[in-house]
Length: 78
Image (tube, rainbow, N blue to C red; front, side, top):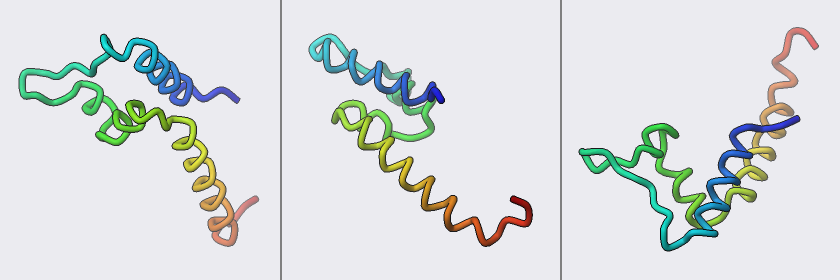
């Protein structure tokens, strides 16, 4: 199954890596990063800049699996 968020962040990470001297996140008039406002967090920008998108999604997948196991006993219908 495709994951549009993962694909998009991997592309941004690749572009940031390929064009390090030209790449930058832009800010609005108040000095806030547009990307942070769209993402709802500053963390994704840092993940991209540190080139840790893949480990981030691996951690997300593990947390999702842990959640699915935990919720099993609470499901009324399977």
